Image 1 (cartoon, one colour):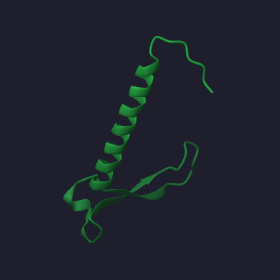
Image 2 (cartoon, helix red, strand yellow; image 1 turned 135 degrees about the vertical axis):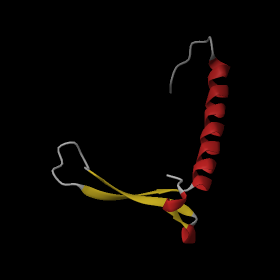
Image 3 (cartoon, one colour; image 1 turned 30 degrees about the vertical axis):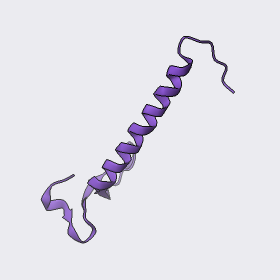
Length: 70
C-alpha cells in the first residue's frame, strides 16, 4: 500500500496492519503487519526482468532442436 497515511517515514517504507484468517478453517482472526518498500520492489523487478531475458536467450539458442535435460 502506498497511501501517505501508511507511510513510516523513519524507515522510508509503507506499512499497515490487516485483520484476517491465517488459513481457511481458522476460527481466530489474526493481525498481520504488511510492509511495502517501492525501492526494493523496483530493484527486485529489474533483477527479475534480467533473469527472464537471460532465460529467453538460452531458450532461443536451442529453439527447434532436440535437447536432453541433464
